[in-house]
Length: 248
Image (tube, rainbow, N blue to C red):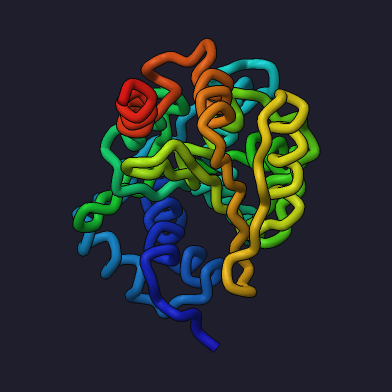
């Protein structure tokens, strides 16, 4: 049975196509018909061998480094890990140009595709994917994620930039997750930092919101996640929204 054709499959095809893997091997690995790789490459204007296998920095996403911890948090929120046959891929899709530019600058993603206003960055690295899995960030993480590394302010800021929101007028914010375990881990971490939060299920679904609703805790939350932050490891749109609310 052939696979359902979608943008994720196109990315898999392009990654292998640009590395000059034989067409027959691409078709066999991804279970697609023989003309599909060429059709996808033509659609995106990709020539054979136009991509180069880049050397991935093994220090990427290393715990203890604030830049790495921020992007770990963002990957937890919005990233995707794929482990298919011998392909170990990390990808991030976003419509936010600020995130796109900063992520590429951090990890030197060797493939960047744009479809309408959606930007998809990804690279293949068994070492990096294995590292992320050891942290608890797995291929099917959305509902089951349980972190096996400590939450830090930088990691939490990354999660918040990916899955958090600030109210337009009131002093409260929230982080949304599909994992009840991760939600409780965040609540416990905030409690350790002296910040009261509440975990609520959203309408009996697989969505959980960690709410920070008290004005004093809202300020503490801001001070916590933006302590020692820099332009390259924060989403300035949310950062300035916090500042505007706190100054009102």
